[in-house]
Image 1: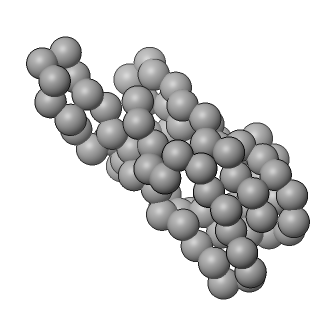
Image 2 (image 1 turned 60 degrees about the horizontal axis):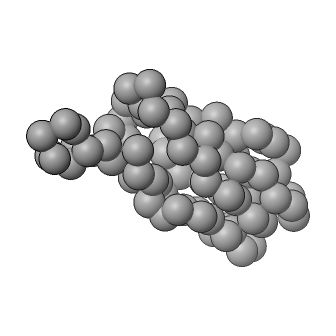
Length: 79
C-alpha cells in the first residue's frame, strides 16, 4: 500500500493536504484506491480529515493510519 505524500506537514490555519492511496496488484498493475481506503487519525485533536484531505487543528504530531484490502500504512502528520 502506498500513500502520497508519505508524510504531511501542515502550516497555518488554511493549509490542506490531499492524499492519494495506491495498491499494486499481483500482476504489477497500480490501482488508485483512495476512494475506498479507510483513514483513521491517531489524534483527531491535532488534525481533521475530510474527503481524503488533512487540515490542521492545533500544533502537534499524530499519525494517519490508512487501510485498504487488508494492507495498512502509517503517515506521520505534523502541525
